[in-house]
Length: 259
Figure 1 (cartoon, rainbow, N blue to C red):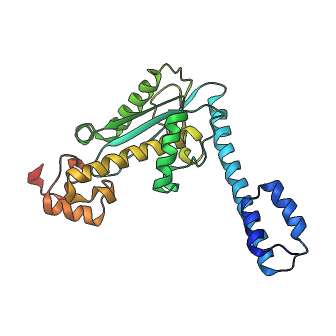
Figure 2 (figure 1 turned 180 degrees about the vertical axis):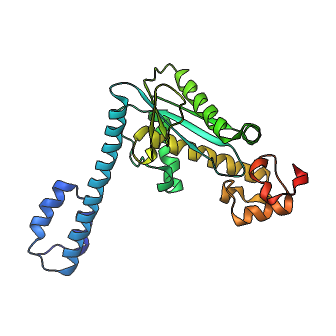
Figure 3 (figure 1 turned 90 degrees about the vertical axis):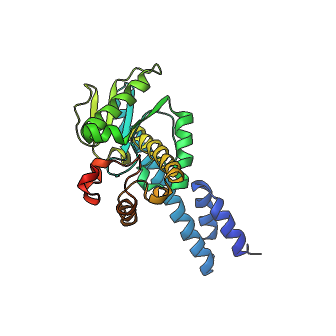
C-alpha cells in the first residue's frame, strides 16, 4: 500500500539531509506529481539550510582570521542619520564556538527575529556594552566626534568587564580610533561579532524611540525611529522640535530664529 501524499510531505518536511536522501531514493519510482514536488521542495529547504549554515560558519571564520588568535571585540553603530534620538553604539565579544543562529546585518533581519537574537547575544557573549550619545552632544560636537566618543566608551565598557582586547573590529572605513583597530567594510554582514553588535544596537535604539513616541506622540517615532520621513518633517514644521530632536539636523525645516 502506497503512503499517502500527506504522510510523505510530513516526512520530508521533518527530514534532515541523511533522512531526505534515504526517502528520495525510496520515492524515486513514485510517479505522483505531488510526491515529486514534495521531494523538490524538501531539497530546496535543505539546500537553503546548508547555505545558511555555511554563511554563519564563514562569519565566525572571518572573525577568527581578523583576531589572529587573540580576543576581538566587534562594534557597530545605529542612528547616524536620524534627525531625532541618540546615536547608539554596541560592542560585543563572542567566543569562537558561540554559534548564534541568524546572525547577520541587522537590516536583513525581521524585527521580531532581531529581538530574539539580541537576547541570545546578550546571554551568550563573553562581554557586551551599549553606549548612547544624546542629541545635545551631537549638536554641540558634531557626528565625527560623537562616533569616536561612543566607540571609545563602548570599548572601555567591555574592558571594564575584565576582557583583554587584542583586536577592535569596526564596521566601515578607518577611524584611527585605536591602535588595535581593524576596519571591515560591510562588516555587519561578514563578521559575527560586528553583526551581533549591529543587532543589539538596533534593538536597543528602536526600543528607545518607541518609548519616546509615548512621551512625544506627535512625531511618529514608533514608525520613523527618528529618521526624516515626509510625515516626520511635516510634524516638525507644524509643532517644532522636541527635546530629543537634533536641532543641527533640522535647520532645513525650521525658521532661523529658532536657532
